[in-house]
Image 1 (tube, helix red, strand yellow):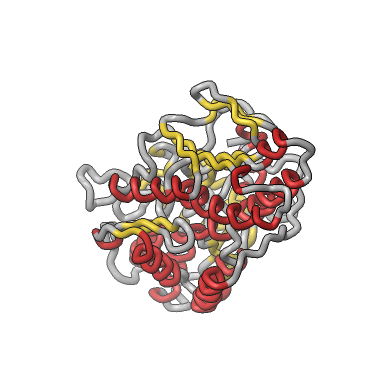
Image 2: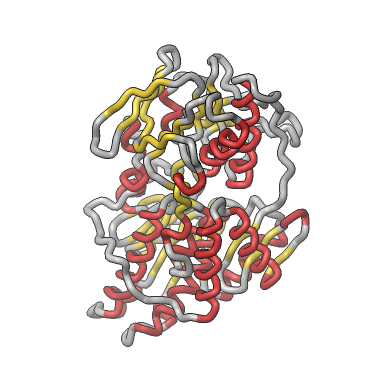
Amino acid sequence: MVVGGGFAGLGLLRHLEARLPPEAAELTLLSPVDHQLYTSLLPRVCAGDVEPRHLAVATRAVLRRTVLRLGHAVSVDLGGRTVTLRTRDGGHETVEWDRLVLAPGAVTRTFDIPGLAEHALGLKNLAEAVYLRDHVLRQLEYADAAPDETARRQRCTFVVVGAGYTGTELAAQLARFTADAVKHYPRLRAEDLRWLLLDLAPRVLPELNPALGRRAAAVLAERGVDVRLGTSVSEAHADRIVLTDGTAVPTHTLVWCAGVAPSPLMATLGLETVKGRLRTDEFFAVPGTEDVFALGDAAAVPDLTKPDAPPAGQTAQHAMREGAAAARNVAASLGYGRRRRYSHRDLGFVVDLGGTDAVGNPLGLTLSGLPAAVVTQGYHLYALPAWSNRLRLASDMALAVFAPPQIVQLGFQAPAHPSISAAENTDLYGGS
């Protein structure tokens, strides 16, 4: 039984189906959705360059023998070898297992900042991405109809917190998108737009080498993004935020991209964790348990390529490789093959800034501009696990080059509380 159908969980099941004969095991996936979401391109969904469903890889398109059970795994009984599943209709089911693989992924990391839970928007799933796109376009509509310049500027001010991969990509791509979109509103001017990118870190993209961070910062500056480092949000309200330096910023848009946290499920197990991630050994086995494995963003898997074996990074690259390696070890526990320690060779990272701008260090090379953009798009096409999704994504990328963006909302109406916890269902775990 595998909990979680993301990069790690779905990848593991694909390799298990290849390694195990049909009579060796019954494979079950517990997941709240029937697809793997290619989260790396969610900023492009927000910018309208990619059709949302083209990033959803259908589970049944890549898994042939696995039984899919839809719902949230909300508790695990390690002694009784059962998982409690909360189904889509609000009911509960108990499911038994012989081998358990925990790969529930991560959720948006938030902090106890006044007003943050009520007013911040996240970007971890398709619903949040499409909602954010609609929200930005709604603000432009409201601004175009605003009675005075003060209200207009407030609606046209957008704040993104987090200058890592997601926040940097989102700010760069949406600044570019709104610069095009504003031309369709007769009462708005390009000067009305204001994008802020905040982070407590000393530089943009602190995970990459400084040269790439500087190049990304230059692209942000060219697009009019006001980058404020060493700064975050101390209060959030419906119509303004207050920064840690005391500055009040009138706005109706706060997007929180300040990192990820492990699935709250891990905190319910009563097992050793590392910053919320379930500790494993180098074979993905969970110490103190029998026949339990863990991998992906919610697991602290030692990376043997680094001194003292710190946990592997919470990246899609790690998750995909962990899936293949963990499948070998799960199969070995059933008598098929031999287990192997996890060892990761870093292939580098790419950051998509939209258009012909990107930065990256694939295979140790330092790239920016058009060469980096070509490598970035090629990598994303390669990483998608289904050829039909690749074909559709390639057509989206081609259309984005030659066709103007569609300035239209998709019909996601504003709920009473479009909070991160509601969108990501973290309230199912006792408010974690």
